[in-house]
Length: 131
Ligand SMILES: Nc1nc2c([nH]c(=O)n2[C@H]2C[C@H](O)[C@@H](COP(=O)(O)OP(=O)(O)OP(=O)(O)O)O2)c(=O)[nH]1
Image 1 (tube, protein in one colour):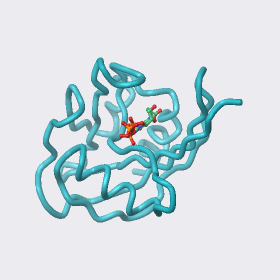
Image 2 (cartoon, helix red, strand yellow):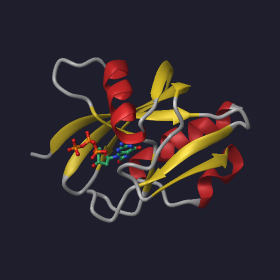
Image 3 (cartoon, protein in one colour):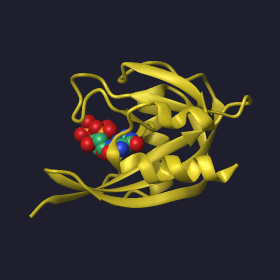
Image 4 (cartoon, protein in one colour):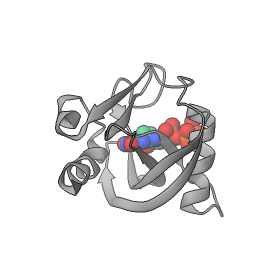
């Protein structure tokens, strides 16, 4: 049976109404695909605490979580992901490149121009619909 993992992802918008997109590095699982920064929820951890921890580890900044934008379960070849995308605001720091290959800010209308991890497509569509 495939493993089911719970992953939280941050939808971070800047003052220019652009969304932060992160490119997974060649050495990560699912390399060279775009995602929203975040990661796996640990045992006994709530979604919001997990996301704050992951964003501090991955981007070196402190966020405030706002609301769940989308929740979607996607079956990959080797595992199943339950991806919860959460709108967030940076309250301290500027995103730094620590684990990803690249970080870019994109306007909503340009979000479909990059190659997203397949599990992220419903969240991307929801963000585009949002405004
Ligand atoms: N962070 C993140 N992971 C995603 C997204 N979409 C998607 O399919 N994934 C997949 C890629 C990975 O297989 C998994 C998350 O793993 P990860 O490597 O980012 O999480 P982590 O930091 O907790 O992992 P680890 O290195 O501690 O094992 O979810 C997304 O938008 N954000």
